[in-house]
Length: 187
Image 1 (tube, rainbow, N blue to C red):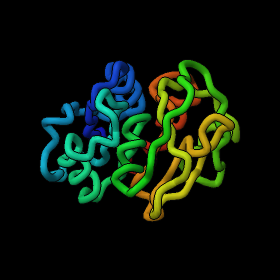
Image 2 (image 1 turned 180 degrees about the vertical axis):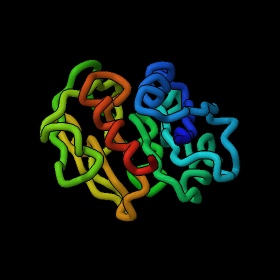
Image 3 (image 1 turned 135 degrees about the vertical axis):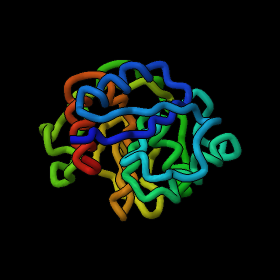
Image 4 (image 1 turned 30 degrees about the vertical axis):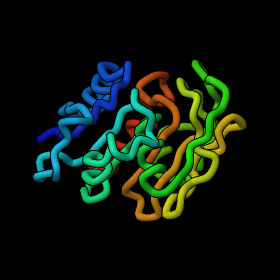
């Protein structure tokens, strides 16, 4: 059986090796490109897109314009992680707000009726590393996970194709299991 290919867009994350390792462990073949090298369109080679965390702030629409165009026109599932989720939200008109720096373990409550969370309990322990937060899901999205520190820990577009996670899913067992839930959308 052919393994599904995933286009992983490296937006400057410190944890790209861990993210790609997790995807390979789950049976996917990650192809990595940096933000400046994203293709204009997918050519059928990739069954999903994963957006890593960011080094450049997600509200820099000019910097991310080619990536946003690719994501919005692709017909495959997209998962944005940390800054990648923020990119999806900002592209949809969402606003980011500064908040306290969070680094390390965090408890997050998820909507168990969402298939992304098939393999986890209603409260998961995830790894966080950020200072910007989304306070409200933008138009066209709904919140599917929350915590006291971040009202939008996970979001999903109304079409179901675009998904975002504030946490770094490449770390911790629960993050790995949520990534496994994402692979169900394209495997």
